[in-house]
Amino acid sequence: MGNRRRVAERRRKTRPAVIGGMIAVVVGGAGFGVYALYGGGAAADDRTQTTSAGEKAKDIPSGPLSATEVTTAAQTFLTAWQQGKVAAAAAATDDAKSATTSLTGYTKDAHIKGVTLTAGARTGDKVPFSVKGTVSYKGIEKPLTYDSALTVVRGTTDGKPVVDWRPAVLHPDLQDGDTLVTGESGTPPIKAVDRDGGELTTAKYPSLGLVLDGLREKYGKTAGGKAGIELRVVRAESAKSSKSSQASDKTLLELSKGTPGTVKTTLSPRLQAAAETQVAKKARSSVVLMRPSTGEILAVANASHGFNTAFQGSLAPGSTMKVITSTLLIDKGLASADKAHPCPKYFTYGGWKFQNDDKFQIKDGTFKASFARSCNTAFISQAPELENDDLTKQAQQVFGLGLNNWAIGVPSFDGSVPVQSAAQMAASLIGQGGVRMNPLNMASVSATIESGSFKQPYLVSPTVDDRTLAKASRTLSAGTLSQLRELMAYTAAYGTAAEAMSGVTGNVGAKTGSAEVDGQKKPNGWFTAYRGDLAAAGVVQQGGHGGETAGPIVASLLKLGG
Image (cartoon, rainbow, N blue to C red):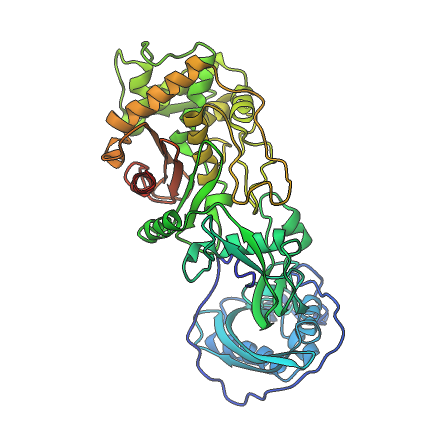
């Protein structure tokens, strides 16, 4: 079982057409060094580009490239690469030094030989191409095929058409600093199983590719398996150590299988299958379902399989953040469920004029009414009474968010509620500003309200590796907790969550959210809810109102889980 995916947001898939005159070459290579692949511009261009004293700037070609220029530059590069002429191929790019390193490593470290490159139909300055070759390592060989693409640009000095060099030209899964290596896998394979012992595979559960990659990276060396031989992308150390990235290595081709070790997860096969079905119905959707009493994650799914938004997303949560903000206001005596609370059309703070959806207002209403209808100004109007770090402390101390110490078993983002001031602080109260969350975080928020205390979510039991789970430093008072449950129950029955939660019976609570994002026509739709000992949250990016988009996904899992 290999590491299948990471962030592949700009993958291109094209239908190739043959360029004639291609010659397959065999390039042998021994040794097992590591060559870092740097993007265009990361190193100086080794090609000689000079302008004679008599040459005038006007003689340097400029303007859009012609079809002939693009096709010729692409064919020059591809032909040289295929023939094993590394220097010539690198000279046909705008970053000869980086290209030389990458192309050398392609044969020496990745052990790829017999390469045939076939160009496809040009689209503007871009030329797709297919790659066929053989990966050969210590007497083991296996064919390799994949598609890639290149872009032709004008050289900055001489204006001549050259390939815009970046690691993705060599292979679409490569990013800056990554390496392409064939050899014994750094991490033995694993057999991940659900809570009932059934094997978890991407054939059964397409969303789990990145989760399985993360499990292998963390537990492969300790689960009792033996490494196999594979061609893989080894991520840059900077990407692996970054809290916002935490990229996993990715297996591209398995030459020989290793012996897997077994890793047991908390996933429910029935609920995981249902989550996969639900996100498949809605583009750009993600969902997480967990058990509040223990923190066990029962399901995780993403419509897009290139990035695990459910665990690693960093998105403004919109009005679902009002669950946390409400606990703060009630704790400080600034709001109470059944007491009168202002909900004007507008409220100005820090130089920003805030308003409600469709500019509605609630005259002589209660805080419960404002919460259920998701009145922004009801929360913004309390900003003058708060310190800049109040919301940050509430999120950290009660809900365990933003401390970068969750250890769920695979890479995750623990949410962020930075200390802000003026208008940005006010915006944070309604889940905008600098606040960032994902479905895992917001499912945990609902779980904290349902159970009464924060229990860090986890995918693999901490008893497997004796790791320490994150804890919150305090719990909500009985009075505040009771009011939050009342607010969320009322919203599920009569507020913005009512339609989605229709038919979800028992001890329930919910909150909707819509988060505005610059450059998007529609906001991201959020929904977080609980039913008994289940809590879930979901987001549909560019989906619109959370009750209409993420709501049905979350509610369906709560119904099934009950």
